[in-house]
Length: 418
Picture (cartoon, one colour):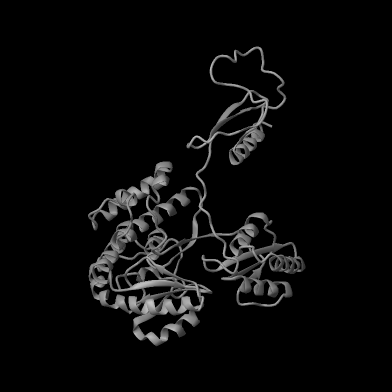
């Protein structure tokens, strides 16, 4: 009862803030005579009233009195309005979406898939991403499981039909858990950064703050800017964005480890492989700082302004066919999912391709970079990078490190400049 004391008051106050109503005080016909109500600005509400708009966030306090005398007072503040998000009923701008199912038996799993498919067909306005979130949050995790992955409604419904029929499907993974789950740390490439990222974590968690400081010290040998100052800035230059992102990723990994979440393996996409190598123990922190700082510097000096990249919501095989006519001007740079492919190359060729695809109704997104990573453009800086990264001394990893190129386990002692 102590843990629950005050919960009703919390719920009541949250709903009052949401609806802009000051609720009346229950079970009070007249104010107590033991209080001088003429002093101060406190009064009892005998009827609900509109909560006045003052131009400032609404604030309130809720007291909790446990049966043993525990007294807790909690302050609440109205959150800022959430940005409006428009739903795309046909698909999602986030690329591939997973729909997860679990049941107590294979028969129940197939029936669940059939019911879900019927529900989605009868509710065409449901956002596939919202359905994915509801399945993850509201369903029990039972032993018979299936995951359907698709970039649009038709692909997801096709996968659901296969689960319901008990038939194999390229976009379906099913089975039963073989034992306790293990964590894999996945480190992203450039593009996920935002101004002030990590600063609040540094203020709240000493481990994150300490490792961020160690990363700043390691980077100081190779850059002329201050890590924390750049975190608070706009993060516009490639020679700043990549080292800053590397430092935040390494710090986040160490923070998770301090909570007891230890990776069974690591994998990194593009520049994320540098952070993955450090966390795996394949590179020292100093060598990791050297790689990310020198690599991004060379890209900024030699490649910036000469290329571009874009995400295309089509399978890699289809995209390869579409870029084949451009010769070496365009290339498939990365395969992010079954229907999510990154194209890299010359800006004019990229503009031409995207214009055609948009005209066909294909979802495309220009990536905010002015160079062509993972294409023939980078061959021009190979010799320079081999020279500046020559001092790197790779080590045997203490955590398995998997390649995003081959999908196989890496021999980290071979992670030299070449």
